[in-house]
Length: 306
DNA sequence: AGAACAATAT
DNA sequence: CATATTGTTC
Image 1 (cartoon, rainbow, N blue to C red):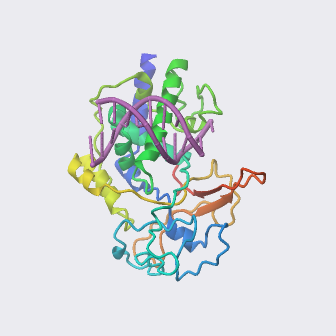
Image 2 (cartoon, rainbow, N blue to C red):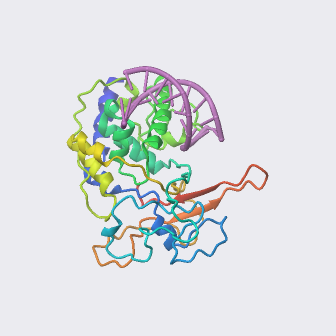
Image 3 (tube, rainbow, N blue to C red):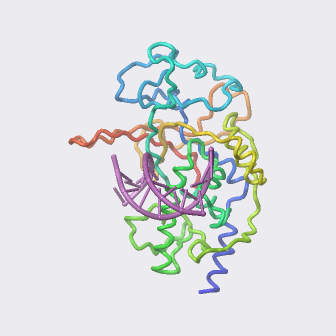
């Protein structure tokens, strides 16, 4: 068993996403612009929603423009700077509204695990993980909650069998309850996690998610950089919360949306008049028809991660 | 004051 | 059951 340990250790190291791999994976969760661009609005509000108003009435995440909107190169279509003066005057859209449930997709979880792996169990605390993930819209609470569950999952596995893991494409999983932790099973679980408190000395280099591509998200990236660099002061400076819409992604690409299939990432240099077609938002009514129902879930398609 | 964790609520 | 929210402790 020990040998195996060293084995997957090597394998794991090789599978570790390189800094570049991790960085550009900017998983813009929300994509409000996209939602708007796609004419996706809350089905609940039959309002035609005039584009000029750009006022996402209800749930539509008007996403508060926390980051300098002034830097917006083009996209002058929606001016978020000036909220919707009419009607709802003075009420910060982002604030007051409750953010929809975050859906931990395999992709998201993978990023989560990778981040934890790079940080090492010891340093893998919600804040750091969140920063390293660089996922827009992700909050510390989201990560904390997920981390809690994840820890339980690891613990469970420890007790059951030592050889679970099932490396990424591999397959053999030793989950005690496939129906319960199928999400976790979809991601390669770093071995060390299962062992026990690796007190430290994780020689993982603090890769820095350089700021590139994307125009916005400066703060988060800065925070991530600061974290990697060890500038705690910087971390504290950025401090801020974000309000977004929904997140998520298809379980296995088995979705039936006409135009929202998988979008590649052309990575257009510059001059692209439109935003990045990184992902498309998808709204599905989870109305259970009967009573209690009435929930909506918006899922964001992965950029083609795995 | 803020973050992490644990427990509880939805 | 999966997340969110809340409470408690460090």
